[in-house]
Image 1: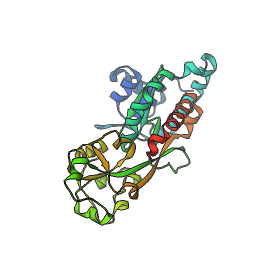
Image 2 (image 1 turned 30 degrees about the vertical axis):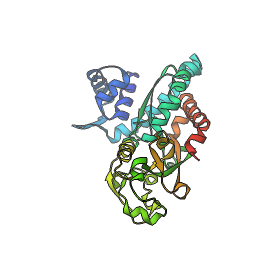
Image 3 (image 1 turned 90 degrees about the horizontal axis):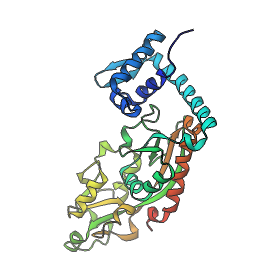
Length: 299
């Protein structure tokens, strides 16, 4: 039987999920030198190469991928044992990384973060407003909020809530132009929107739903950059109503005629459903979003 230190597996798991020594070291609150030494020791003990080292980071080999599945099962069993010994509340600790769109991240921070830290004082949340670069399969995030559910059977997806988007312009901008009374008049205005090739979710591609012939001329991958451009009078934009309505200088264009509905979904790897911590956070998110359903619907 191969002799190796069982606690080296936590270093292996951290590197496998983070893809970089420095990021894994931050998660484990140690140095990258220690992480590197423990991974090297595990490889020597197993007499297997678990990672390919690249300038941009660490990538699992075929041996590493096989070990990952086993190590994650061991981790899950270890968590169950910890919960049985110390109680579920004590098991709710550590870092939890949640990937979410910018708009939802702002909503979470302004409406739910205080309650989250009160309910989970021992959990350190990491909110990543760049969901297009986070992978649940590589465990770069524990949970993700998306505009579309995950279809693969290895994931669990549940709808959080619907939300509305409308067309907005700055009050001064609209006052300096003829009243917009039809969709065809929109072709006379400059539009602000996303960079097409950087749209990370089909749900963000909505300008064609406003008018078949309008295109964004000022583009940004950030919805808050778009809001700033609209407030500066540079054109019109489709914006989440629950975000836009926080700015009194933004006015809806074509009122109820241009209303786009999307939904937020909460996703996790099915293995994570075995963790009381992840289940508790998902329950918290669903309840918190339900309390603010009227704000998100913005009717």
